Image (spheres, rainbow, N blue to C red):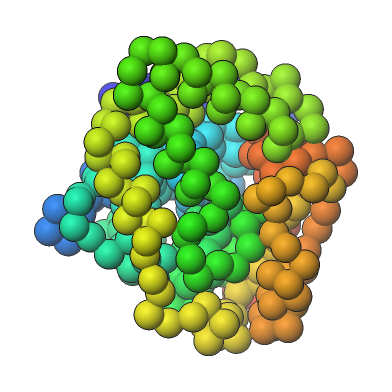
Length: 321
């Protein structure tokens, strides 16, 4: 089992929501799915045992698909996975190409449109017919594109502080690129961890989650493959979209919810981005989480889980035959 997956399993077994999950109630399975030549995505599935599976309404058998941002991987989704499993829902965590522990080819199309196609190929490979997409940061723009193309499969989309973007030269990519360049030496690695922790604290209101162990787990994928990380991040930074997201947003049929914290941070969706979603997505709402920054998956996981469960209920109401 991959070390990050093992860490998530431990977190799921020990973190309580309605009640603590026992290891016997969780079936984790990490795999790598080939979507094209030299393009392999890391996928981790968590399935509650049959006795604790949610009794879903009607014909819908929904799976929650979590898509971490450039910094995080499956470890960043551990609280959300634990809470959703406690409610009986299967969870799939997908690292986009160049992110987390997925492949980092030197020659690849790192555009958000290409990333959406790859995630869709993974869902095809897993035979997942009905999903709720949850995208963090820049990965939300991958989710927007996927929801606009696969309107049958996607029943809801939750963005965790991720606005609609056409270029990945965002603060998240620049931050990841800066830290990847720093960790080439032991001295640089120590400085990068301190600087990363400081940045995450700036993006949070309650920064108690920013422990040394958690920061190390966030940076682990970059430390293991520095050169590959730099290649991939530069590819993301330079990628140009062939089709603007503005043309895709009106095609989204599923309800879209954007969660933002009330603390102003550099990676918070801008008013024009929120206005774009409001104007072009038929069923859109932005909800503000009080006393929180942009790392809602860490600071306010329970409120993110509540928002996902609300989407599940809405999907059951609107899509059940």
